[in-house]
Length: 303
Image (cartoon, rainbow, N blue to C red):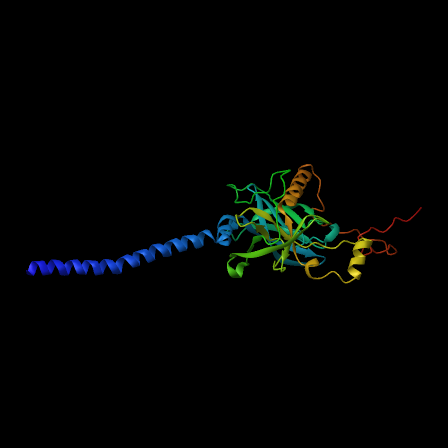
């Protein structure tokens, strides 16, 4: 009798134990599935993990007239050999090729490096607001880089409402941490060139790489300056240059790839695409007319 009661009690205890453990096990499995699903639906973390290593810091000395100051800009490695894309404005460039400052003593900081690798500007495109920097010496091992579209490749279709992920590297004070941000596409322009227009204008700075949610390179943030011809000046005067007209745009990856090909080929041929480095203007005679603000050169005096 006692043994039968003992067996009955043990069986009841086992059932109670299982009834408390099984729901916990199911809950743990469900939590694991939910966590895995959340990780799979976190494109920003994925883009940072895949692309952060291609973001570098460009350190240089900016020279403007008699003044010099240390400066930094964000760069994007676009070739494992050490070809780096950077904002032309940040490197002292100005619209329509009028270079307002000179960048010298250029160093590229990669990862945790604090010393930097020597480099130089090999080309500029002031219309597209791009500049290219090349390491003086090939790196010991190929650098992490983003992949530009192949020459002649069709542009990836970007539609209003699509989400892009942008990356930025913070400064030394914040340990150069890479951060991501989301940008919703508001529209796409065809004139004066293909540009992606962010919805809400929430891009914080120029020269920042943008990616699709599957980590494909989509373009970089740029300033699209309104030109200096009569029609553009008329647009300025009617007061319609506001809001999305003035906000940062995104230059598509296909346009960047084509411009990069031109810059590299020009450099190999010993030619400059745009102005490689600003040159000090020659002293003008006292009676020479000053350049106007239109970007046109003063007419030559007639004999």
